[in-house]
Image (cartoon, rainbow, N blue to C red; front, top):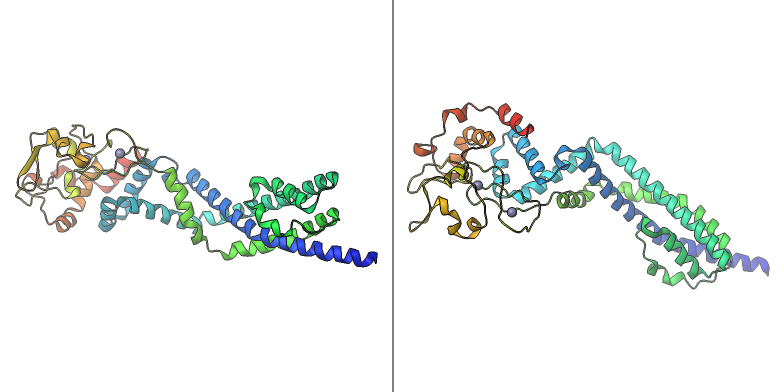
Length: 354
Ligand SMILES: [Zn+2]
Ligand SMILES: [Zn+2]
């Protein structure tokens, strides 16, 4: 008789433990995945120079890599589909990180995460058993304690366990043994689960974290397309950027001609020239805000300096720009000889020293 009872007890404990581990295993895999994403994003922020500052710093690295590649189509994406260009730049960096220098680190992150969850589960089993034995708790009480002990270590909802909480289990000590001995095989299963998930699946989540960290205003200067450097996406006050660009970068040309405007918008707003919209509307550059829309919300301060970078860009890609916008660098839009003398190395050095 007593043998039969203990057999029944063992069977029901085994069923209970199987059920619990069936719920725990996917939760452990998901938690590890979550932790890996945070760790990889954190490591990239700490070790990749493009990601360890604000968005203006990221943009500097983007401009460096654009100059290094000398790919005009990529420049066009950067200039005209700015936000998605930034996203794919970040995404490519994550993919590169995961396939090269980060791959060994990722294995280490995985081992650390797996071990820490394993230890958390083991101590939750031990501690909840010790307390439950003291209070001669029910199974439901043990489950409460177990979930409490897991706490933030595992995203695991207690409500998933309602169906087993009324099971009759008298031998809590035996439950502890059964749970503990199922731990290693369960962790092996988690290891298999996680290693079968391609790293690519984590890329969008990592990108999200990095992008949130590098957020900012995406408004672009209506005259030269430079991106506002305010770090708050919907900030108060005017949009602004420390460096504007020659307006030809954005396709501006002189009224009734096909001559590019090579002046930087900061010198245009200091001039006595006019912005013309269509044939009948003209506004002095000095009063550019009167044009309304984006013009009204930008602070463009008069200044005659232009970054070497964009002088080099205009000169280097002159024929590509002419082809793209169907305008010419001629007349008032003639590219100064000095611009043609700027080398790629000059602009790279210039940016790297910023
Ligand atoms: Zn501008
Ligand atoms: Zn802004």
